[in-house]
Length: 251
Image (cartoon, rainbow, N blue to C red; front, side, top):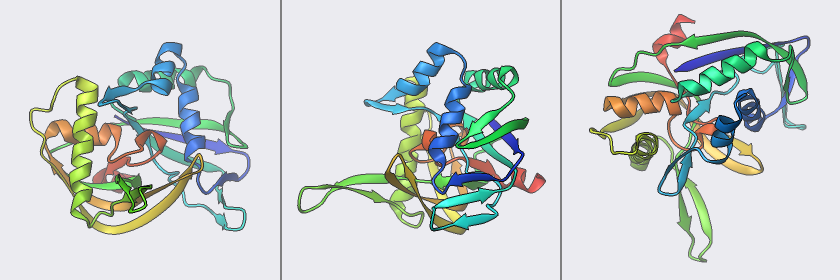
């Protein structure tokens, strides 16, 4: 499922250019059930000793009014919005209950805002879709240099490994969620247009990914995971949320 949250402030909203941690923290704070919050923070869904939180969120949908490159900050309008998605309806239930019972104001970094609207959006997913990456899709490998140092290599959408590794990542997410292999594990992602590299910092670490329009095709099991949990890695850090292009055209 997909959810859109809108925030309103009395003044322009100032955020660092890498604001993913701020948005992630807001979503975690919305989970008002202790055991579930602990599960999402500290455990997640496990496969091969890897934890998958199986939710994602988008970039802020509105364009910044100003980019202060010296201070590395965005100045957004007073009203902003974003998408988030999850495989787990409990996630939405806890977030929604928290929102309707919360104090009036929400802190977005050093900004004070109110939640002006929350909208749940149904995406009827077929086995072939044109999608927009609303936050960068990242997929990578950890390699050893000749000096025996570890190096992270991020794949771009035009390398064959990009689609192959995203497919493997979806399979691992499926197994982590359901405890078994999907009955069909076909999946392919192809870049279509407006592909742009994005570089963000998350807790001091660099993450590279790509936004743009993609065509994805695959087994229904993996297509559903892709839309709910996000494509590629680092989803719970605000990477890889996708939305059907036709839904964006309706807005």
